[in-house]
Structure formats: C-alpha cells, structure tokens
Length: 89
Image (tube, rainbow, N blue to C red):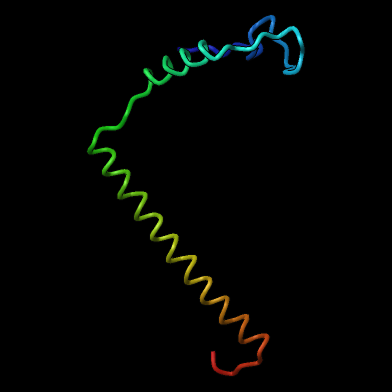
C-alpha cells in the first residue's frame, strides 16, 4: 500500500524563481548524458504494436476527415442558401 506525502514536490533548497543568479545551469555535456540516460529507459513498441497503432490512427484520421468534410459541405450549402436566397439546396 502506498502513502501520499504532504511534502512539497520540489526538493529542498530549490527555489521557484527560475531567473535567480544563484542557480547553476546544466552544461551541454551533462545535458547530453542525461538525455541518453533517459532514452535508455524508453520502452519502444514492437513491430506488431507499431502496425496496430498505425492502423488505429489512420482509421481515426479518416473518420475525422469524413466528419469534417460532411460538416463543411452541409454548412457551406446552408450558408449559401441563406445568403443567396436560393430555393434549391
């Protein structure tokens, strides 16, 4: 069972003011090492998962394209009919 702490999320000694002159900046070499260390923690999807995700995203995009296209067509015709006074829509 996990417990929730009431302590602040920021570690002790850190300030919330980002522009203070007392703060040290991370150098480029340290930054690069930290990026590489974080990328080693990444769990990349398998080929099967990637294929599944690709088709799910493509299906969603096609559905959204259809919905937006139909709305555009319908609203365009309605606006045209309203402002031109056309009887046939």
